Length: 290
Ligand code: MF3
Ligand code: CO
Ligand code: CO
Image 1 (cartoon, rainbow, N blue to C red):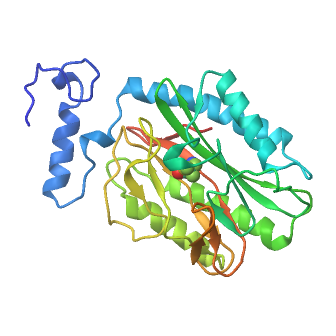
Image 2: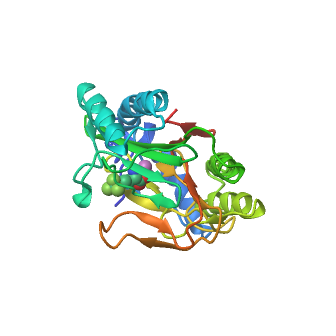
């Protein structure tokens, strides 16, 4: 499908193609001819969409700040869920997790050996020494933003503290690997895998980051392990999450047979995760969830 210079651009900006994504398409075509895997048009957001995602992320970020102020020993994960649900709704947003593929709550709370998709519950009480990931996804005016942080409850073990730190560093190594028009998804994976493994930790392979913005999970899949120079090249307008799940023991996981959601480490070791929604720009990367 080739557009004529004066047609409106395919990105939905309303601007003439020649003033919008024409040069972009030419660059992409050159990369494709050289054998690079390139994103589809569905993976490229226009300015208006990026702005919508930023507005959504403002609520998502403020909510994580609020949780960070309130989370404490003795609190149930259900209370975190209620806090988040009410905050989101009262700010005009919708918690994306609720009813997503039947998910029963408004966010995910994953403690200690839970890797991801922990389900908030009145029965789960935060105790001294726990590490917990709180993962929230907000919809505002149809735009999705997704981020998670780790919280340490009271005094945690040295092993837990290090795991939380190394995992956060993994997220930032992944982000820092991004060079628009040059690096690829494999660079993100390699940066994360290198850092995790050189610190004696392992990378969960069954889950990854994902395109985000107009839906909770879009293409591409963003692996947290891999090889530099492989996979899809990263170009301006892409919006996706990086959300490494790093284990202190084996990388193997299993899914809770009762709830069908929660992933646990197979060996019972600790797992941590940090997540940002990022936007590839012309000259670098913008962390939207900040
Ligand atoms: N926020 C999660 C992610 O990072 C998605 C949770 S989906 C749910 O991709 F259904 F488990 F809530
Ligand atoms: Co995500
Ligand atoms: Co998330």
